[in-house]
Length: 68
Image 1 (cartoon, rainbow, N blue to C red):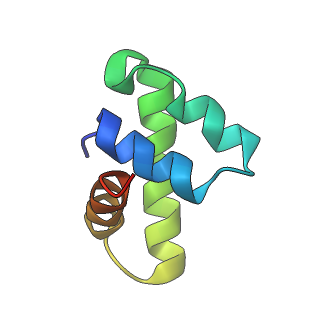
Image 2 (spheres, rainbow, N blue to C red):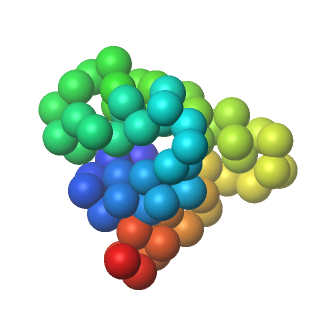
C-alpha cells in the first residue's frame, strides 16, 4: 500500500464529513507510521466489507485524487 498525496486527495474527497479520516490525510503522506497503519487497516476493513482487494480501493483513491 502506498499512501501518497494523490491517494490522500482521493481519500479527502470521499471522507469530507468524517473528521477521523481527515486527521489521517492531513499528515504528510507516509511520514507518520501510526497514520499509515491506520490507512492500511482502514482500506483492508473497507475491502472486507466490499468483498474486494484493498489495492483496488487504493487504485480508485489514486484515480479519484487526480480529478480535482
